[in-house]
Length: 226
Image (cartoon, rainbow, N blue to C red; front, side, top):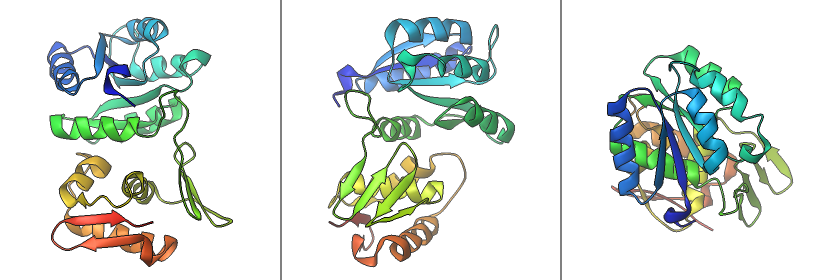
């Protein structure tokens, strides 16, 4: 997917956040459109059909939850990824967002590097035509839409972070992903975690998928082996 083909709709009623996020995403080559409330978001989304919508929860006129519910009812936007911006610790908003049809959430305050990594990870789930980009390596199939894998003939549902870690590594077999990049992309700024967290998740994946699928590069990170 070429970055110039990707449109991102950014929705927030705080001008400072709009400008900071818009600047950082535009610097990466994305086309960024903005809206200040849910009503504007729906109108703009219908017009531009963005691949990704990043939307605040608390906004005037129409909040993000209601806007998400309405967008999810529009056939032309069925493949659009929606991620919410939520304040740290707003568990209620996060749960309500998922129930409304959101794909993910990003917590405030926003760190530019984490934001860009998160956006790239979200967009990797989809092909140029908007269809879900499943991964298949030998006897392993990773279904990104349904968050499940197929190993030989056995279907497995992995915990969310295990799945995201597996999908990240498998997206580029042979590439060594640095530990700090894995933390940024998979965990972001949701919680404070250490490198040991990655080790634990890799150990669990080795037990479920196969020890030979993952290689540790000492002092650097991990890679997926095919």
